[in-house]
Length: 306
Image (cartoon, rainbow, N blue to C red; front, side):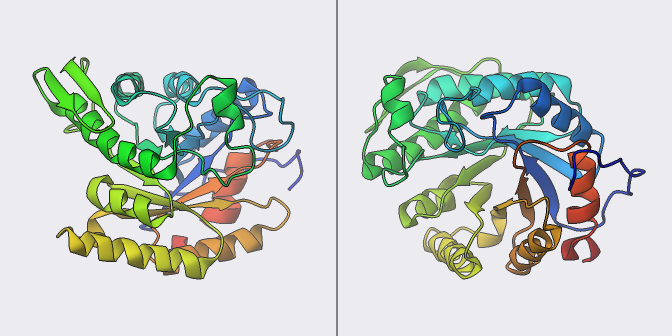
């Protein structure tokens, strides 16, 4: 794909049950470039959702390059778009106290007119290269995995309550203690924005089973993806929840010079039951990249004919 691709005429809205979106990682790229892609995507019906990530320093490319704060940028993009559902893939629960995060997310839902999909996860794994750097650089604690998973479950409960409960309440949790907690304004969406939890670890999948409306996993080994989805089914069964009530979402990297490989990855994922596909766009973003995604990867993929 070159930087001089011309846009084609808009394609009709796909009849596929698969919902496609894009992800623009806000690192080593300018705000104007991200805004250009989102505004273009907002006018293309085949692209239904758009995402940022939640890192305070680059995790690829120049380690000392720019990295925009995800929720601040999301609010700005919410104000400049009208149709796209939008979110952060996914918010690090380690960065912000849950009551503060609930307030931030409700604000974005109001700014967007009720288009937020609330993405959250435990945060970077200790084994990830450079994972601790952004925490120590910003004075944030980096707790162990047990703390991260336990606090995620409590955070989901508290955030939902702040979005829905009409009166102040107290919380005496293992990880969260609040007095007179109250969320106002409430989100536009009723009863609340959908909750997407990202992750593949067994402990995280148990939190997904209890709290998520959508579950996202990074693509890769499709057999492992299928196995993790089956494990989520099992955990749902253990708590009496219908596994089909959780939408399966997958993040797939886009190769501009090999769209056939991306289409094949889409076909494998949708055959495995994933109906929410997030296509990660590498930088630099070519001209009319959203139109290219719609034509080459969405209407050109197997799911669009299902």
